Image (tube, rainbow, N blue to C red; front, side, top):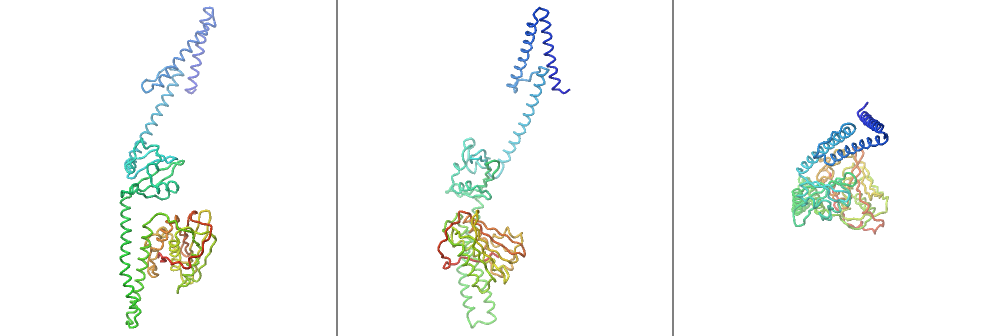
Length: 450
């Protein structure tokens, strides 16, 4: 017999015994029912007294020792004490874990903010308070956008696309930059990581300024050198043994000019991070113009096909988009063998607009794909120098797409060619086809990445 059943049997036996004693007393005094009722009333009063003791202890258990009534009431007290100790143990464990969590987050070099479904502050660590000037208790329950009023930060939260971070300057009059990275969790909740990136931002700005200034200063002397080399190479009285070195110097000067031009173009794109507006233009016309330009070169592919699967137009900066597309086409021309073919395609779907450049060249190994858009990165440096590539073309393409809210996708495998696809969001797609104007447009930069 288990403990619980034994307690109930004991309580029932006491009740039956009390009833028997009451009946015996009533029979002896000549009033059976009065004796029985009196005894049962006394037994009920005892149970109410035990219930009162249990209730008093439960209400004051932190200051009063538990009662020891014995019997079934004693078993109930033992069970309650056991549950109380277990609860106290788990509560202490949770408190210790919370203290460890607070100490660990307080020592983190980055700020951490917990936001609920309404983007209201639930909790933040010490570093977040220092970086954003948050105050405990008074700022809990306040929307983060009401405390950090910055349009770019508001757009970042509203977009709901937290794959990357957003870098902003909270106060215009201070050279202080913060990076915000949102990490969704739970049901609509969010973990906001805050990091001070002022030093990195200043270093990046110095690097960009140096590249832009150096490229600008090198352009003038290089133009003079290229002019003199062209004059010397065209001189009919030049010694025959000097003609080949002059032609090589002229080719290298042209390559350096192309690199400087690309550096200036890349610096101009990096100087402004905001999205461009622009107007609608015909992508099919642009692709056709690029094909005609390539086919007019002395050395060109065997065929360039243009597939326009949508009449929709693209909204953006036509000159920048032409620069990006021309770099992709020029890459395909330079890094595919003679007699190869290139395919240009434009189409739209529910995700937006897409422009791809495919070739049947040697392809690119998978380990090189993540780094293709890095400046000066080359899969085959020797071949890239031979073809005159600057190593900046795909970096320019990436920045042009970023300024249009798009992204570049590269799919390739050795021996099966490569496909470079520019993805544009739906807001960049317009239904109407505008008038033709690309045939007379000034071509943008079109140097390969190789």
